[in-house]
Length: 177
Image 1: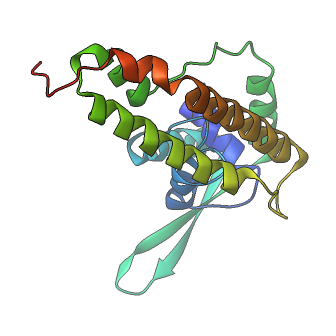
Image 2 (image 1 turned 180 degrees about the vertical axis):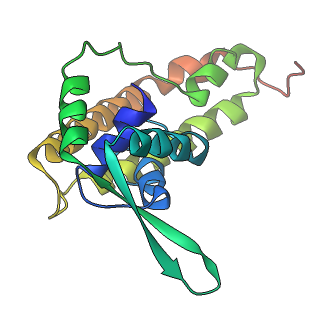
């Protein structure tokens, strides 16, 4: 999905600065499924402004550059709606954890155990965060939260019930790659 579409989607929830939009991808409602960085968000906001899909209002700040606050226009809302009706790409699951475990046979067993323990702890923390809806969630956000909760629950169950399979193939002692 194009970053311009992601920015339009972020602005559906209200006026925002580029910084606030970025936070939505770092630790906000989009953080679970999409990535966008400052380096892609700001050029996208410039393009959207040039195309009349968003407006930009500069708010003066003391001893700092003006804060740019972006707002979705009706034309932008229609563009987002059109973009959301296009075919969507297949999901891509990116995981350094799983990539590293592809080579578990080269790693010490303690390292593999530690990785699984750390992953389980992180997933359980995320599961707890997803356990309850936020009062400001839209029905779509709540659906996505519940979906994420189900995925994390299944992942935790899988790791707890099958960790022995990956731990068994790790080496007994320190391996050198």
